[in-house]
Image 1 (cartoon, rainbow, N blue to C red):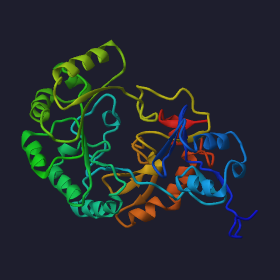
Image 2: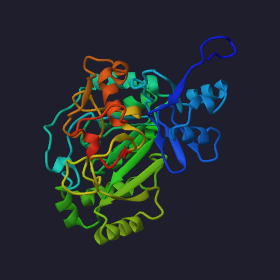
Image 3: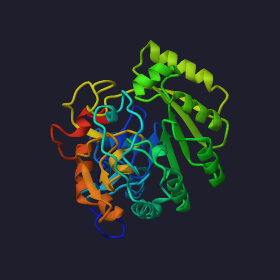
Length: 365
């Protein structure tokens, strides 16, 4: 079979990195979505159901679908590809709380601080992706505002044109720091984790009597243009007390810039004994859908400068590179990361104890 130019026609197959929903399909490698009714949607669905792709449309149309990420040439290695959309950059391992829903409460890590020289070197490499990056999260399991260098880190991110995203318990978001960041022009995203207004319960559930301090800090920032997106996350176990906490916090911050959100805790891929968990582990994996695709759209950097698979990997079982002596590009396109992508998306069968088998965000067949 040849195309009109006389060269051999390209044979296509469905991309193995698609997320299939009831009425939408998402391509993480191009950050595109097809919805029912869109041109190409029925063709991709037909291909998934086993139709011969070459018979579904002219070569020119198939090439367009390949450019958009729905199809890939047969035999092409695509597990080394990525689309960097988000970053988790942990400058220290320190957290000043020990929340009942977090692994820090059961396996606190030793204090570790990334040097500012390494921090800036990493940020410089991230800046090459500023056109696709939507947020650089300054947290993994640390409390970013507990780091005395917090403002310097924000400055570095902004100097390189990157969008800082801060998730915090609010303890170190002092009025002075808030005002300093406002003078810088604010940040991209702020999320505050506040689960109750009951001081005694707060102290027990988080291991620190910080509620009065947190509320003072939040009262200072709540009406200021600190970030285009300002959210307050109310975590709990989905019971009546959780619903009551949510209602009380929502009422207290009504009319502010904060959008108050209700979330149930989860078991962190089996690390924690409480929270939402997958009903079974045996099904074949077919992807990850936690704020995009962790293996295809994220890089997670711990305080030692290592890159790990995802935010659920608290114990760093899946290290894919070390930015102390490797380049970010080489890590993201390297074989260690490529293998994990093949496991996550079921291109190759993952080990029985693979972390994604125990994660609520794993897509399954």
